[in-house]
Amino acid sequence: MITVATWNVLHRIHAENWYEDVSTRWPDEAARIDAVTAHVAARTEQVIALQEVSGDQLISLRAALPDRTIHAMQYPRVPTARRHASALRDPSEHLVLIVAGPSRDIAAEPFADDGGKGLLAISAGGAVVIATHVSGDRRRVKQLARLAEVASATPEYAAVLLGDFNVDRATVASSLGEGFTIADPPSDALPTRPRTSGAKSQFIDHVVVRDATLREVVVEDSGGLSDHNLVRAAIAL
Image (cartoon, rainbow, N blue to C red; front, side, top):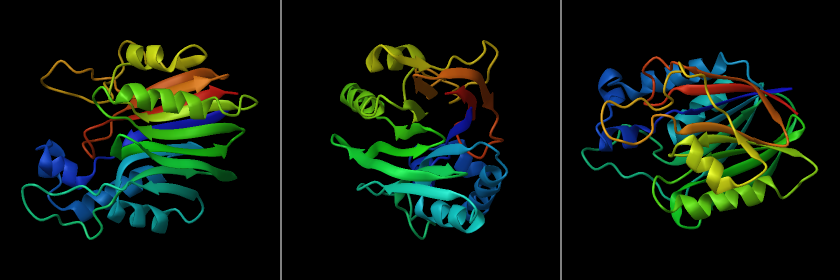
């Protein structure tokens, strides 16, 4: 059994560029970074995947979690502030996996068609674990195909995919193909990406497995720290 979680913590520059309410609720980004780190540090899952991690946030996580291994990939594209200068000292953006217990790197790559999205794969808990952030347009087709390829590269191991897929569960399932199971939260679950307008799905953060069984899936309220809620699951390998 392995316990996992995935959470898009919202890069500050993206929040300000897209007028997300989080930046209004948390005018002091340093305080929000400390709160996000405290929230993550209190988690008990063996593997935690984070998306949209700023350089400042990554430094905070590394300082607060010396007993866990932090795998990170920096995207080649650095977010650019469009409205005013960013308060971040390091505005770079990262995909992160935080692991309690032994782990090793397998792959880290931005997607060829989007320098701000990608995948980070490790071996941990007897499985291949992949953190990802997928583009929210038709580029997802090739990106999901690449994720399926990486997840299936070592068939002797189960695979777990964690991340912000920017699309609904059914689309992820059809794109990844046979052999993959996408977690289906309870009907009364909180949305993973709450919205007040627009037709886009509010369930776009997913836990996906290959050759494993999902035992529990819960969406937890992130208390306004991000525009996404955290998704956690227990997985039988």
